[in-house]
Image 1 (cartoon, rainbow, N blue to C red):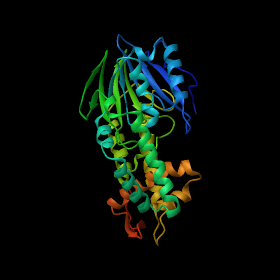
Image 2 (image 1 turned 120 degrees about the vertical axis):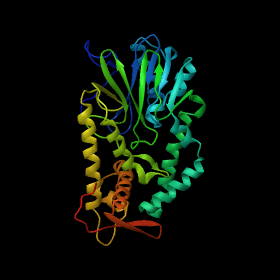
Image 3 (image 1 turned 30 degrees about the vertical axis):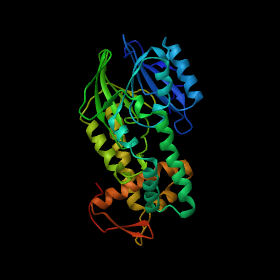
Image 4 (image 1 turned 180 degrees about the vertical axis):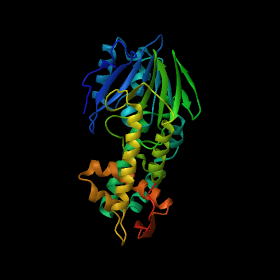
Length: 339
């Protein structure tokens, strides 16, 4: 897969002068990107990963772009994941930055972590997670919620973004586009840079892969992730952009193709989830165990399978019942398709 191993101007002289800043993460594809937009007021889109190495890399990349953390005037966040908000506090402490973030972050963060823990435990049990794997899984997921809340405390945000807003930030007019599925809080931002329409896309419209439909991990709402992602991609199909600046993968000019490929990949996940069902009944975990190899891949796929089975049940393709806390899904005979 194409990789950018150092900060670089994202394009040549014919392309918008947007600077890509990149740091490493411990999961595929191994990097996450932020983008520095030039102008009389410096705009940074996303804030890198958590940790000292990520901070050092962001500082180095900003210096290479003739910018220091204290020079950033505006910080625009796409969604509440730790690899996109990791250095918010460092940037705030360095200068006088205005921070913009999706309002849904505030709504999610206002729930207590105990409520998140209880919902996560119940939803994992319903997915079929065995008792000996249940509490370690709950602990891991709640720890992820805690770490991202610490990286982005609510008081760090100056402007909350809602659906339908239009933003004037520095020299740019941004259209926030609500695109949940990968994360329930996710927005991407369309704007004009030079003579191009560009999309600061966060974790949608990525090449050459699709971000996982994590949505809420296993908090309440896990069953809605696939439909939310499908709706987001359908919404994006109403737009046209010359160039996409994603949080992972290369900068590219294949917006339409990336959106369509993601749609097809979601449909494939739904199809595979349906075809994995046994007549006697199957849990989401049993499907994930059969289709994945390793903890990381299983954790990525399991919310997608839960969302796929919920999608199928709403359309009458499967039926389910609870058995000792676990939801057992069975196929319903039909001649129709799954969509």
